[in-house]
Amino acid sequence: MAFNLFRAILVLIHVIYDVYCEARRALRCARQHLEDYFFSPRGLEAEIEYVRQERKVLDKPLSHLAVILGPEVVSVRDVVRLALWCHAAGATYVSFYDPSGQLKKNKFALDDALISACKVKSHIPKTNGYINGYAGKQFPHIMLLDISDGKPGIVRVAKQICEEVLSKELSPNEVDLELFSKYVMKESGVPEPELAFYCGDIFSLYGFLPWHSRVTEFLPLHSHHNVSVLNFVTLLRRYNRCEQRLGT
Image (cartoon, one colour):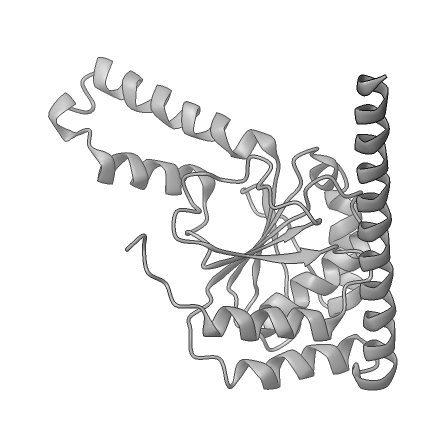
């Protein structure tokens, strides 16, 4: 009897929590729709210009911005919008981390969507991403990452260093933290991101580049689907106010 009562109370708590989470999500969506309707710029060009204007008041450097898609189904349209916003915000490198690898599989669809949005020719470099942009501007480096670029990438670097030591290309005395970090950065082809957005209500990195995110600031995007440029700019402002203490 006592066990059944405890079980009923536990189920009731879960139901109440689920209702609370759904209510919060619905309120957030309603607020975003209202803000978009009354205050958001209309059209991709207007959104890009809005981000460019906001960039002028940002003090902190932002060379690499990452977006962790997590468990979400990839929306190519919204990935393109985010990529162009990130470039307008001053990021030279933009990484999209999809642990399932679906984004990499759809890289040609993404490339076509970028060409359509940018109205310029595009090409695929030897890296696992793209170099795209629009006329008269510096091309951003758009990297497509999946689970194989995380811990498995570190394992590949460790094996490479061991092989070079065995073949006497490297001396064991040369192997240190600085050398290992140099090899890891070279293997991925991107610098450490200063800022990363993670999608979803759960703060999880889903295996995202553990060696590269030692000093990265992580902020919640909630979802990349139908993402609002106002929300994007709000996160940039929040990042600009962050104080990096480096563990102190």
